[in-house]
Image (tube, rainbow, N blue to C red; front, side, top):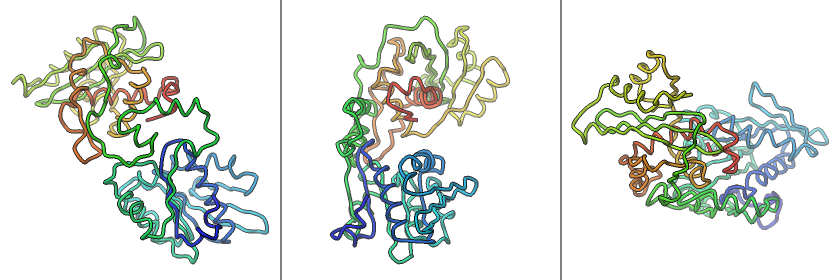
Length: 399
């Protein structure tokens, strides 16, 4: 919080904080950023940047009143995404809010002259946006403030900023959960059991590590249940394919769990028999088995199948949420917490769990043995990702 005012650190041009989740990075950086900017400037402009403006408001703007309300007066001009912050002796500065996740985000910040920038979740922003935001800091005494959770070691932020921190005159601080004195031991243990594989190494250990091996490194005992619910809320998830496999799963959500009861899986290329949308629809009805299906969640690119389901009017259909890495992280956390289970009759899903691997050297899964994996991800991201009761079991909204 006070590095900028310490004799041995004040000559750095910025700070980059990385490391584990819930380690206090955001709180420490936000307090430090406002103490620095209000102590050193008057009538200046600053940028507060997040993955999106909504995430920025959730992570920084909303809790700012609790963190800084007794020190500064904060006026939020919501419609213009601008904060005006004042302190004693008439000192006032303006803070503009920006989201940096879209390809054209850098255009929004062009032209402004800044005395400093805070980049929250910098690794989730576009490189073009981050570089443009840094380029706008041309006022004498300006500083760059970054924080992020680790990604892969090929990520541009790791290679261009963390590995070159000394060259760029950036102070690098690495955080672990032990750095957060407000985090209770029970919460630490929850997070340590929440993640597996690459996500454990990144979010709990705070490592910039390569994704490799199985995407979901779970045993059959962790995945399978014979204890099937007798009733609940029913859903169907679909990954659409014609020559590639078409995968659909019937789900029951009840008692704090979501169980994949049955599945339909057809490999057009493997069987040498292509199905029409009408064929798939009849198999969808068979899979539903007359149960009251609340919603069919389907691959968002399956326009013809979506149109057919809507035209028939028997099922409510919804395009699935499709971001891959956040979806995989959510599925992994739900399985780890025992929220998502698979019936032993769903042999294609269980087979794919044992074959679904990361692309070598990339933060992306291989595009093979992924069809049941995709329909499971669609269900978890679209249906369970909005279920607050289930998400509380895994420590928060991972979607």
